[in-house]
Image 1 (cartoon, one colour):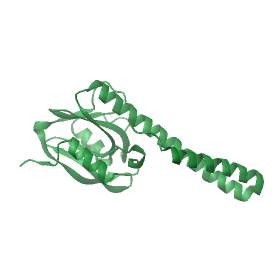
Image 2: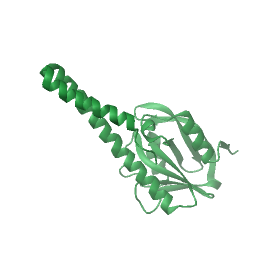
Image 3: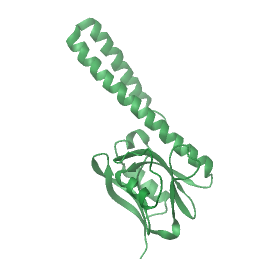
Image 4: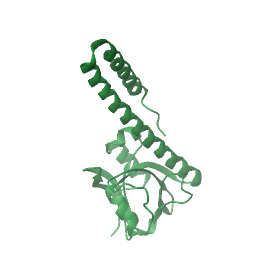
Length: 191
């Protein structure tokens, strides 16, 4: 999986140091405001780090258990919970608005959804049941974004590919969507 963006981390660290120095030199108003901004930045970085680690765990787990598969790092969409329920799969621990780190294992006969360090995929879609693989618009957080979708006779998948995990926490990017579409063997339309 990807590496942390070192220049961004260095910049945030320098900002935090500058905020601390400003507090001691300029008094409480400017320093307090800078410290508040530094705390928000630090919390954002901590959340991003935790989500990145969870994504790496899911991808590493899927790769270890399915060495024959192409594994796509991804985040769930809002509809992914409903799709899981529709096929009787567990969606325990997933947020209804999306953003949960997952791994999509693309195999010759099926496409599997992996979450965390679980010993089995949450669910899978057989290649024979796939009706369409293409780009769609789906709910991610509080807005609609372009996502990759696999529509099947029963269930399916809608996810944000995360080849650039930190960038994709905020939504999809065109290059990642095209790469994932290619990894899935799409676009496909049956019937």
